[in-house]
Length: 313
Image 1: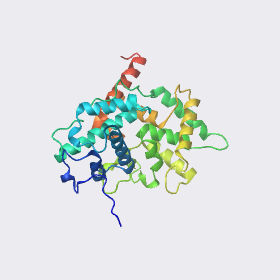
Image 2: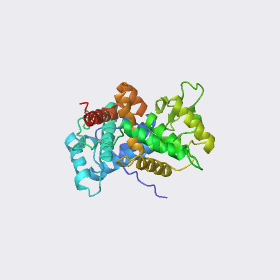
Image 3: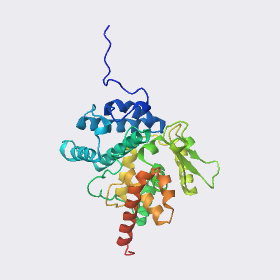
Image 4: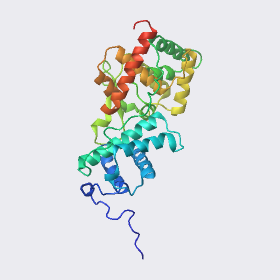
């Protein structure tokens, strides 16, 4: 029986075997293992590896690590954004820059390369458009619209509970879908909170606790009494939750489509204007310090925009 030859001769047997002469493609399995040890989710690992495969498509998986310079990586990013022929959103572009920074920092930390070519990479060209956020008056209007669903022959607590939950916590769509009854801590009714997990065992940094108001806890109790969830808190799909947000936003006269993303940004702006510390908001959003650098600037711009619209700046 013939034995299949390895894709890359002299593949590194351990991360310590990686050197500047090692081909890009021969490092990716060890990079994935590094990400797992850092507690990254399988979704993130898959996305990061796809980004590295794209670099291999452009530069060649057989290219030795020593050949990657900052100018070469910027040329790759330019190709990806303008010449590849596949649309690349600002969010995807930003993630791919992050992938390169994480990958080459790992190699530099290992001592496999003498300098980090991704450290000074340029971010996406041009500022990303600011998110749509609600004013305080619009928040009150949406709450009033959501409460209309609690009236009539078939009262429904879900619209107001969903909206208030997102406005207070800023959790993402995926995080909302994964919330369970056990994640609502009601041990102390005067200091309730929710636990947001990322499915990574034995990694406390992948779980955060977000305080909620006693009013929201009361809404939660009413919602649970009506829907009787058994495991996950919400008993419908995230698509249905998106429809609910769209409907109550339209009923309140909001001039843009209400979404999980817009409410996440709204929460950050409201907390910023309320005087909460930046570190508190960062931890509440579950962002790394690298991600927070750009996000905090956008929050500042959104706050300034609201103040100008209100004639306060």
